[in-house]
Image 1 (cartoon, helix red, strand yellow):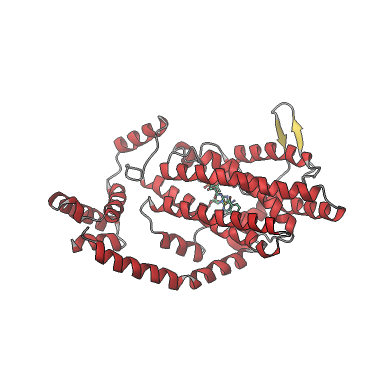
Image 2 (image 1 turned 90 degrees about the vertical axis):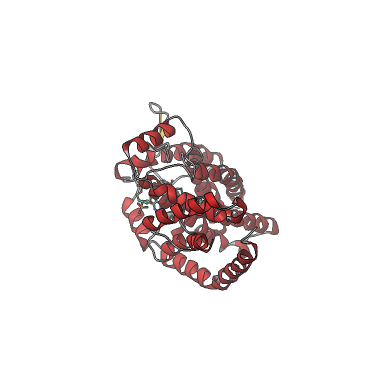
Length: 365
Ligand code: BYC
């Protein structure tokens, strides 16, 4: 039994994992089921599947499953590249939700009425929940949440470029809901059809909540757009500052997107960065017209041949600058996350101690 406890708590290399899996399977065969921890079994089974050698037959069966529209679940065999790509993408998504609380959280105490304050508080809290579902989805791939957070704090993992810009006025909160949550819905509705079961299911709930977020943002925008001249100017200024940055959320153009080919082949993504960006533009242009706001792009015009709105050139230099850590608020965001991590240390230690004591009391149930 003590050998199995070690297996659940240590970080294992693939080789250790294989040995541990073998020992654990032996224990499972000889011990009554109730003596084994469920957490433990889940942990080593997930890892165990990554240690099976990749053969062309395994890969063909895996790809066939995907092409039939079946979901890949944590205990199914998967190529190591698929697992790595998902960990990268889901953890980046989780970090984005958590870092994304900062620009809006900054306005909770300054919201202009109790109603606005309550709604914004609930929205920011939803984003925290999204981060937690996504860390859980990443953990089903056999990675530890702590490792993911440490990668973020060390600057090795990315989070969405959009959260590296400052929220200068109350109108920014409306525009974030409208553009940023609107862009997230377009992207995440596609990800809700992703081939990886836990990610696609997390997206269903997240998308429902994002729909409320977008509506609350658009309502703020519509109110300001129908308000005084000063309010109109404030909201137009926010639109001007967030438009291009929202288009960058969809990632580099398809020609410069190194991960897309693999992700599309394995149906993690079902549409390309450019296709989703175009859909977002097509949805948003009429919404801007409805509230008499102008999008800051002189090349924006309807193309009757394609049925799309053509738009101007994105400043990719700015995009790469931001994702490489040099945007207006990158340092501030990372400082805030590091501080939160330090301040939360005692809570994690207390929780770990509680779990340790609780586990030692209940390990034989
Ligand atoms: N920002 O090969 P590519 C929210 C990186 S939060 C930063 O096209 P891929 C909300 C990319 O990671 C929701 N980095 O990558 C929260 C890659 O670098 P690495 C946020 C970006 O994965 C609070 C490199 O560029 N949504 O809604 O095929 C309040 C090359 O890119 C960005 C998600 O996270 C970027 N914008 O496609 C309000 C969606 N774009 O990792 C709202 C989930 C690209 O190789 N993620 N990079 O070093 C995705 O859908 C995809 O990962 C992306 C990129 C479309 C973002």
